[in-house]
Length: 226
Length: 255
Image (cartoon, rainbow over all chains, first blue to last red; front, side):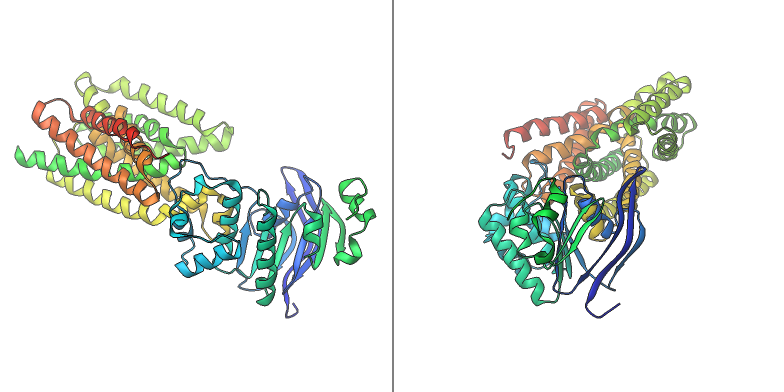
């Protein structure tokens, strides 16, 4: 494995309940890279992330660089309104100090007051909850972050702040990001590499080379101009 | 006589506390009625213990492990929902118990009796309570995290299956202990009611879990005290005190 290689995936196949969900995928991830995964609904993007995390059985090869600390922002994260779990207690699962907590909230554009930390997690708005989850994942500065549709419910200003933090911080530290998203316009500007899939690989490469109306039509079934 | 009363008071305070604490986790995991069902699964063991004069909790525990094993095996073989299988096992257990449970022991089996507890029993129960509480305290936050998102917990390195197993063993132990205090029929309330009351008034997780512990202990001690004064059975009194606290908690419910 070369020095800056963080993840290498070779001939990855995933079968769930007799259905082939992913077929023959090859790609890699290097330091400072942002890999964006595109694909229509049901293409297996979330399954790919969960497989990379070791949560699903697979055939083929997934090799992470040794001692890689991975953070994961799942697509679905809801908290029952009446669960008495405060924001502060949610961060206690991570065993991080107050300075890390406040820092990670800054990264997602929230000025966290003590009063905010005392709030029940279930009473936050969906956008606030989403940002809090991202802050939670960032709090112990993982080497690689896997984000599955992270910005759903977050306003445009929030999205910019979060993308800026992610790009700036994680690239500064030679760390990397894998991002699943539907917001092709917004996201592809930040991407270093794009992997488009629909069960199998549709295209893979640098955004300027692969984001063409013809290729986007392969994903979404109609020509799209950015 | 006085010493006997102090023993019952001590045992019920400890069992009420650990049952309340466990209940806060069970409600969060939407398993509130499991305590109730398991209380019934234990009934044949309770009946045998009452007939042959050995510790009720021991009889209950053996029966519970057997019952849980059966449910687990049925689940693997039938793929029917867990609650349906639990329903089958718990009603069958009640039916079996009533084949040989003597009429004079029915009330003790169903609503408990801690008025006759000895020093040895007290000591063993208290030790079991403390150990179970410490184990639950250790796994508590990880169980809550895996309840929020199992995938997130696994990525954070939590061995979810292992923790679930430890949790289920704790549930079996607490049900076995609780049956001594409130009997098979009322055991479920010992885990549900104090935790539900605490959930109404708690602002955060520690207020919730320790509030449930406190309400469990207070309900048990008040129940046993009222039993001492009026001579009514302690098990139902404990549950009624807990229910009253639940009603009061509604007034202070967090919005």
